[in-house]
Structures are given as C-alpha cells and as structure tokens.
Length: 506
Image (cartoon, rainbow, N blue to C red; front, side, top):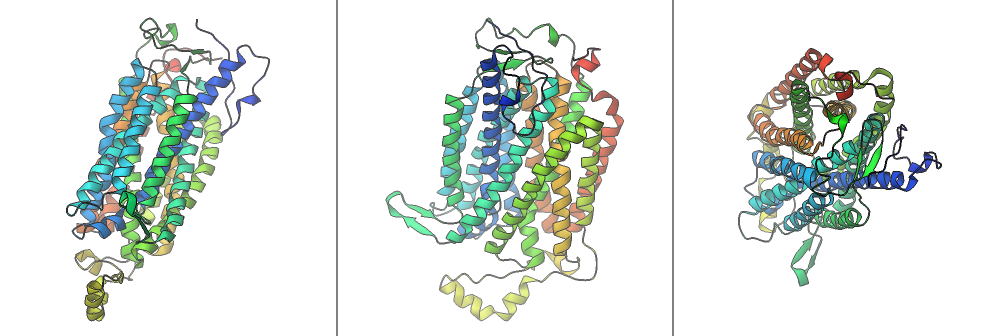
C-alpha cells in the first residue's frame, strides 16, 4: 500500500532528518528515506575514496613494476577506469529501473573489491605487469558504474525543493572522499616503496599496494550498509514519498505527474556539457603528477606526497564550494552558477599556460653528471633516480617552465569551478528529466562523463608528451569557451520538467 507524506523541507548539508516536524504522519517512512539517501551519500564517498587512494601513486607504481612504462601508457591506464565505468553505467542504470537498487549496487561493489585485490597483486607476474594494472583499473571502473544508480536513487527519492540540496550533499561527500583518499595515500607513503612482505599470502605491502587493500575494506563496509540499511523509496515533485516493492504490478506505477515529454535537446546538451566538465577534470587529475615531476624536479615519492596534500586541500575547498553553491543556486538559480563555474575553470587553465624565460630542469643533466653513480645504483638496485623533464620530451628545451605559484593558483581555481559545474550538471539534468524513472538516463549521463574520462587521459598524455603543456592546456581553454557558448545558446531550454509543462510546485 503506497503511503504519502509532504516534505517541502530542503535539507541542509549532511543535516539529520530530526530537523523535520516530528508530528508529521508516517515519520518512520521519512526517516527511512533519509537513512537510505545517506547510504547513497556514503556509497559516493567510498567510490571517491577508492579512486583517489591510488591516483597519485599510480604513475610511480607503474614505473616501479614495469620499466617499459611511459606517460602515454599512464593515459591508457587512467582511461581504462573510465572506459569500464562508461560501459557499466547504462547497464546498472537499466538494471535499477526494473529491480531494487540494492542488487546492482552490491554486484558493482563486489566487482570493485575484487579488482582492487587484483591491482595489489599486479607486481606478481614476471612480465607485462603494466597490462595487469590496466586490466585491474578497467574492472575498478566497471564497478564504479554504480554512480548512475546512486544518482538515480537520490533523484527519485527527493522532491524538486530537496533536489539541489541533496545533490550538493552527495557532491560534498564525493569531495570528502577526494580529501580523505589523497590524505590516506600521503600517510601510507611513509610505508615506503619496499614496505614489508607477507609471505603467507605472497603480498608486498608497500606505499603502492596498501591503498588498494584499504579500498577493499571500504568496499566491504559499503556492502554491509547497502544490504542492511538501504530501502527503496520514490518521491514525486511535491515531496510525497512512498516505499516501493519491486513487483511486476508496481514496476510501471509511475503516476500522473510523469505525463509529458522530456526535452531531448536539453538532455543532449546536458550530456555534452557534462562531457566537457569531466574531460577537463580528467585532464587535470591525469597530468598533475607527471607535470609536477617534470616542472619541479620532484622524485616519485615527493610527487605522491605533495600532490596528495594539494588534492586533499582542494577537496576541503570543494566542500566549502558546495556550501556556497547551495546558497547561490537558491538566490540566482542553477544556470548562472553553472556559467560562473565554467568561467572559473577557463581562468584556471589559462593561468597554467607556460610564460616567461625560465626553463625546466632537464633529466640529461643528472644522467651526464651522475652516469657512473647511476650505473652503480642500478647494479645495486638502489633508489637514486633522475629528476626533471625527460630529455625525450623535446619541448622541455624550448617551453618555459610552469612555476609552483602558477600550479597552485590553477589548482585553487579548478577546485572552485569543477565542483560548481559538477553538481549543477546533474542537478539540472535530474530536474529536466522530472519524476520519470531516471536509471537509464543517469546511466547515459554517467557514460558521457566516463567517455570524457576515457578520451581525456589519452589525449593529454599524447599532447603533453609530444607538444607540451602550452598546446595541451590551450586546447582545454578553447574547449571550455565552446561549452560556455553552448550553455548560453540553450539557456532558455534548461528548465525543470514541471516548468516546461506549465506546472507549479507548492
């Protein structure tokens, strides 16, 4: 029997449902709904932690276990995660439309858990270790296709007035994951490259494998929460909620509020804009470690530690941005906030363009001055490594260096613009879709973002290695300008489902 309550309250960031009026009917249904939504927040948080736990150490891990690794292959490894997610998102989204959300969630998390264990053992084979890392990251990405299910659930379990707040909360949890992931990686870096060996299970526990194993623990916790706490709920645009039993009779019981067609142009435009937003961020996260090692002559361990600290600070900043976005969207609307976010991202990459007459340190200086030492260190399996911009990258000889102040300033601006655009992308998207089941549509949105994160690492690794940062980041600036023009041209169509069909929400 369907049960309804009214809930016009827009929940503050990570607030407890106890703020609501206790006298309202069916309070237990209301509390169950928000407990389930918070499980989705936590699922997004753990997904983010699982990704960022290894992202800063991925490049040095590849270099350690396979000498044939180069920056181009790093692009393919990062892209493998997104390719797996792109393939899985529509599948899990479709699954969640016809079956309880718990099923695709548990299945995807088990895949993620297994893939992280595979990643931790990627050093074991005698040859082709880098391809084992590639395959493991593809399966981790496939498991991360549950993001479509998470977004679909939150969109379907919140009213229009709650939607922006709930999406911002979910993005804040994602940002907290970006904070904790690099912070944990930075802490685990003190284990060192050699670490300890657990002979009973033939495991090398070091700064590269420990994060993946920690991610498996998080996955296990996530499975328990999904199984024990998550319950199915559906909410109409006015905030009336009901528990759902996924039976054949209920499967098509959507309600009169879903009558009307979805604006396909608005949907396609939203997917295109989300593609740009995710492309830009994928470029940033892929190139951060190689760029800092080339420009600032950091060692592998220093790059993991310092970039972990920087990303941790950016994640903390993102939480503040989500708070500001919630206030700004209430005052000026979602679309202006989206435009402002794109403009800030443009400024971030424009600042990152190389200027001046100072050039990066070239690695051949180390090789020339320490050739004998280098040969001796290789013979004794020592850890002396050349630092600076590799001489194979010819642009290092004529492209000005990027200064640390530029790098940090760019990180700050991207850390403001990206979260604003991210939360506005799928907030607007969910409102355009209206109260219809959104699993498949959210799957396509996630797939478009994953497609961007598949193409972007390959693009930036090739463009950066061959042409250098000036051409790579210049292209990104042009891409963001096109996105701003596109958003401006369809501005009037990016409205909520009920507004398009002449309805008002009290």
